Length: 428
Ligand SMILES: Cc1cc2nc3c(=O)[nH]c(=O)nc-3n(C[C@H](O)[C@H](O)[C@H](O)COP(=O)(O)OP(=O)(O)OC[C@H]3O[C@@H](n4cnc5c(N)ncnc54)[C@H](O)[C@@H]3O)c2cc1C
Image (cartoon, rainbow, N blue to C red):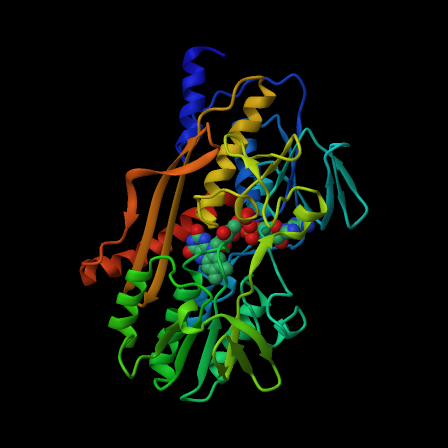
């Protein structure tokens, strides 16, 4: 590789979302990459592998025929968007030459370099990318399990439960109470439960103005807390006697121990709470297939953050929510950024060259009201000696606390463009 080409290559990998000036080198054979999971990490990696070098044979295996994005699913709860508007098929990826297989992967067999599916198929690989998202720890709250979740929804995967929760909010009597049980760290989308409270309040403000939304939380602080409480105060009277939203943290007894679905009662550390609608977001761990494939250490999958190759098995790369990628949050934008780094590292490997030094990006918007958006953004670099991803000081930051109404309104339209651009980048 010439020096100029090498520089071009590194530029691609280090600038997330950069246009592709990548030199497409001739490969000796057509290496095979199997991607497990067609969410943000999996789709982005599959598409970018093909863009980096169309000689790479990419097969993506996903359980569902369509992807329903969790990001923006809170807006379905307020009625501001439909489930259809967050539902996407895989035709775009196919146009990039990705082979899409609808099946469930039972396990990855690193010693045989193959993936085995529930449908009985076997896929050989030179590199395997695994981005299965999260699974729940169902034994954390007594009385709450997968069956009960059909009537007391978590709605933490966008889909039928999003509709169930929305319908329950619509059917709730005026003056009713919605209880959101937030999860402990780490979990996907740290600001998600607090945006959800605001989106439900946004609906109630217009249709059930005496309703209450109570958040029970096993934590004492949460993401963008200052901006959230400021927005809740302005829009929903937070901190006053008539507040529509109430938050009870760990110190106030917010840790929930048990659910009695027959009486819709939650037993928390100090007292009992009764709700008309209950939304429990359980504690989380890496997706099932990561455990079945021996990719985990504790709840998550350790990786070499230079490439996102598993620390446990060679040639297997774990991305997104399932990976241990602190200090990056478990977010869609983080998964998208990690996928590009992994794709570049895999193509480098096929070309017999060192992977480039990565830079990662995260941006996360939360919409608190029709004209009130807030955000957090960060750029990250890798400290190779400690295998730690660190935020770059002075790059990114939070929306200012003293932003004008115009700025808050603008952040809502930025959030919607962010969504359209991310979907486009990952699968169109
Ligand atoms: C309410 C909510 C709001 C959010 N809002 C934002 C936001 O505003 N901004 C943001 O950046 N992030 C947001 N997120 C987080 C974001 O959705 C996730 O971080 C992101 O989707 C992670 O991507 P991933 O590839 O790791 O997993 P996912 O996108 O969840 O994809 C995993 C895929 O793998 C598939 N799969 C799992 N197991 C198998 C198997 N065995 N075989 C085949 N396929 C399998 C699943 O069906 C799924 O399609 C939000 C999340 C929630 C819940």
